[in-house]
Length: 302
Image 1: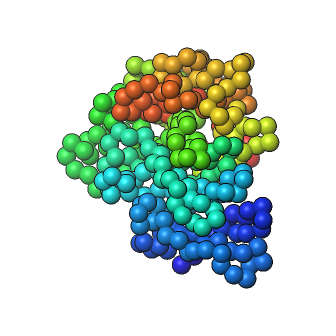
Image 2: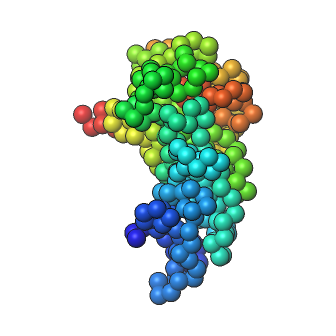
Image 3: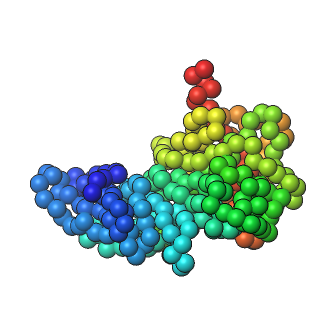
């Protein structure tokens, strides 16, 4: 047994995220503020939530603990969905489990969540989604996998094996999904996605950690094909200021920079409300092609 993360409440108590194999993949133990005794736990959240925990944070009032991670889908007990589990800080009792997923073909697509932060009235989670590899598939499934066709209903939008998309979401304290979005870095010479036209993602993005800034914006540490980067969203509430409209590329209101251009740092569209996402099994794939601000740190160093 080992630990993956810790979080400290305002009263000095420390929540420790534990990890082990099998049923021990996620547990929490609350330690007293002097570090000498256990307040509660370790409590298992892996068995009934299919959760391998990756990070945890207290809510602003210290009443709740949000836990990010991933594991098998709750309904089928197969494949991989991202998750946010919310527990009571006073006793460790589980309150809600919310799955974060792009849907599509779950046999092909992995959904994994890593970092988590309290962002006022809920938790924001940093995730990634995509096809990991095709070596274990045969027949028609392998053909779709090799082509990057994660959704049989949207074959023209292709994210090849190993080409992931950043996925971010906000869950309120009751476990309700407030907003969710997918993004990929687009270099200056890459063509922007236009709804209804074929698209082949040129590079891979995934959000690893998220930081709530003092001005209400969110900063995501990105794992990019070209190195590492920073993605910044203007706010955490799913709406934007009057000077900016969401650029969601899925037919809802809003605009994105024209093909062949890159937005200036700090002008990334705000999180897209769920009401703007449209319908369809992979409406979220359309979100994955939104132009975002990602600073390639490796390129800056060179």
